[in-house]
Length: 391
Image (cartoon, rainbow, N blue to C red; front, side, top):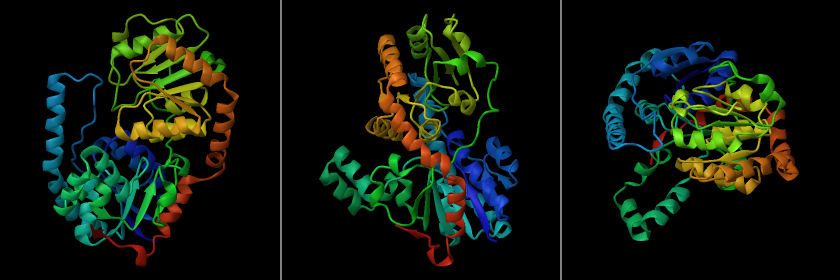
């Protein structure tokens, strides 16, 4: 048996895929420590991990139409994160003698975990909650943004690792919460990359459960969840409600940061709650409207639910594009009108090709055990492969 230290990034979309893996490692008799912010400590304690609470700041909310003050607060929070990082690394290292980890499993966004592992000379396994990237992919993106001359300057000054955490510390093992179908250029990745998705945490007991379940299960049902980070303002929620008013659709809106009462009177077939039990609602959904984060995309594919993607973040745009290429999703601009949204939902719900493709993509996800695959990869991470080196 080995000793593992897990370092999650303290946001729900990063924590949720890591919890089932921690639970599996504990169930296999491994000694598992977790260093995480207090808000997420209970999730890991519940599955039997030894949890140490640490103080970390993150930018946890990106409003749809930020005010000048909200932009200022976001920049302020980002700078605070940078200032705190060295202190968090020092905090982790103070616990090293107690934990004595043989492997550190650090979320790729939790740079403090990789930095502490590097400084302590401990094996590093990287954990990515979305598709991952290689140096060639990063350089190609920089060329498109800045041009070849500036990229050469970036390389010459040794600044390339600043553009993605994967380039800062080389992990001997990379666990990716994705499938080959959703991973760009997956054929080009080496043996240290394991595409183990979907690492899904059942959220059937989360959120508000006072929903019209009979109507949801009868269908057709459209479920819209923008997630907790890249939320929506009232305008889009109202557009969505008006699109389905007077139709045979049931619409469930998870509004998160937006107060449902701010939406005003909704049609009788539209229900809005801040948080809903996504796993339970998705199982009975006909169409899923989503930002196209990896967790949501994988869960929808597993449940064979076609998607309308309205992405905002960089990785969401990449995932949305891939869903469209696979034929299981349609990408809409958030300024799409009510008629376009309704027509898209009706088309996805009735398209036999979409249903057939989803069934094909879902089959290996239903038969496989991604959590066990991720745990196997960790346990097979042998001492000879456990190297930590700076690039």
